[in-house]
Image 1 (cartoon, rainbow, N blue to C red):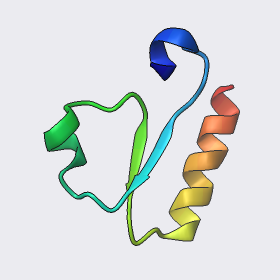
Image 2: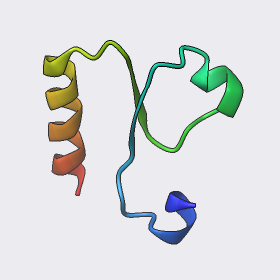
Image 3: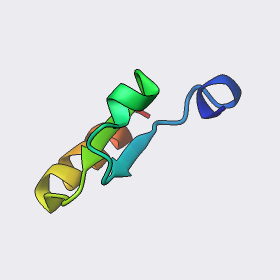
Length: 52
């Protein structure tokens, strides 16, 4: 819904489900898997902010 209603909004999924891609195909954004490396999280957020 986010992609169709607000295509300019960046999406970052954080999940503990290692099989998210297998279940959902291709989520409309980046995916981080738990446990989260906070340096990687900061890097992803910085990249999303730079895109907007």
